[in-house]
Image (cartoon, rainbow, N blue to C red; front, side, top):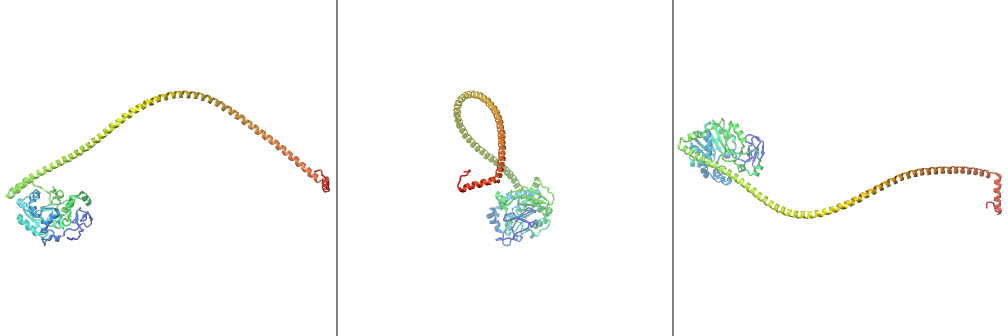
Length: 470
């Protein structure tokens, strides 16, 4: 079935965010809005064999898709469970002969039970086949079609009840506003619907296999409200007083909405009205049995809780015993290993004791050797002291000798310097004398005698006579 995508919440907010493949989330009221839910015009059944909420929805669709019994089985099964539960809540706030309308009454069993209790009750359904089935089964007045199509007198009802219906409404504001106009000033709504717990993400639901996932049916469950969303919704309608009752199923919420403060009736007041008629007495008997059953159920649940607690404790004890058994086995293994270690340690201690005695013997011998060595060391120390004294004397003598050597070296250096100076002076005098002689020789070479002498020697050399130089 192809649907146009929705982009608006019942509260008017169009800023919706992605929550899951099939739902958007409203940031203002916390409601999950189906992307592809049915439209208002699809609630008007034109073809009972093919339209969504037609005959097959009650005979096969719910059975095949959700595993629910078909409408014939539910007409029997719902009476002692759901119908009595809802009736007990209704009578806590309204007493017969109050006028009550049930929207989405299905097989009409609850309408019949209200009638047996003395209420002026009628139901409403969308499928002509379902309306006919309910009328034939329980012989109660059942209206056909959406609430907005009915010709009903305003402010004529004391209560309008909707059990697993409000989430199916394409335009819940329009439908419930019309319903509010049909209620008297002190009239009430009683609603059972899925309870969306805000704060959980879709991935968390999938990971935890949350039961609420089964209620995310985008074609028919169009608006999935949280408690906050419900409070805001009915406050907008003018129903400021909300009383949340104990829900029949964990995944639902069950509440009463009113314009005025609640004044609940006591069990005695409820019984007083029921016992006025034969059918009312039958209903009272059913309520009594239901109470007994609920007490037994409560006791059974307590026993189950206790049993579960005991089983949990037993499992814990078994786990502890198993752990202790493992620990004992481990300790036994450790004790066995420890005994082996002790035996090895004892053997090692005996060997160590023997080694210690041998070591002690060696230590005693070492002490004797040490004493002998100590004696030799003392003697060596005495010799060292004597040697040290001699070395000190030698060092002193060496220092004296070095001092004398330094003086001798100084004297030698002074003597060498004096001798060198004298030689230098003699050399200087010799140089002066040589210079004088050279001068004299030069003077002689320039004299006539010297010149004649030179010529004589040359002549002798010329004629071959020996000269004085030769």
